[in-house]
Image (tube, rainbow, N blue to C red; front, side):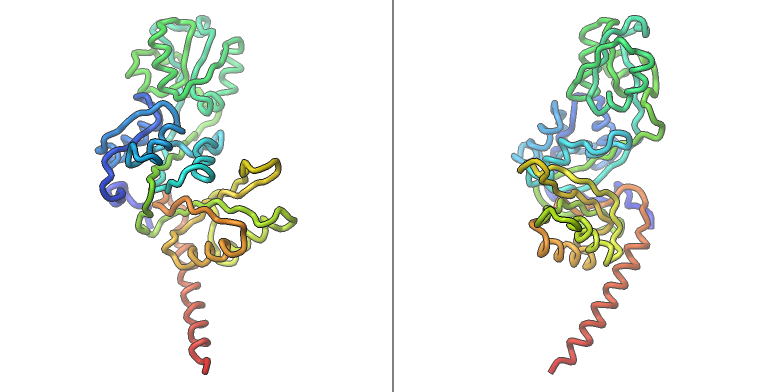
Length: 320
């Protein structure tokens, strides 16, 4: 089974506006423009990931598009924490795009000129080795986005200032690409999610579900007891990480991405058991998955569960 094409996906009814991390020429905008239905919405760039999520939560916009994970740096914690602890939002779709970072400067900039490099912190972290080897004396400063950094360099008009950003940002803000593809590791990708206040997209047959599981007690074997619920049903986990719950030092929950949809009886049964046995389970969404992660395994597991359920029903039907 191939992953669903963007044209086969649906948006929440009545969705007309979408906020994204701006300004113009961020990777987030690049991801948005790659989805025809999202690109057709009224797009509103905002200055931070938190602002995107809050705009959706308070109803200022219908949808938001934010980065959630990078292949080099891992989770984007501001997104993860907002969805797990702070805001009642549901993921509607995930997008994965290739990421190539470039060193940008005003026309005529050379390595010898550069004294300061600015970018979004996640982007800067992906270029640590390059900065250490090629610009060891340069000051590294943070911006709200790669595009904001590029815009500021263009406005300053100073060859001593450079930004790390997209090739699109170079075009939009009239900058030179001083060095291309400066990320420390090849094959860099970023995963983005579309979020809304409510609604779960219908299953496509190739879906992912995200949850936050809060332990009833932090005791030996507590994580194993959670994982056994998935293992017993042959549900594959594509991501597992722990995050502090913000309630006290050493108090952690587990953020889990699993293959399947809440509409799958096997997934529903698993979450039902977790909800009854753990302190809490927060549902973050069931949505079309990007890429191809072996949906045949999910189909086989659902079929096996259905056969077992029918067997149990037959036994119970014999009760006088």
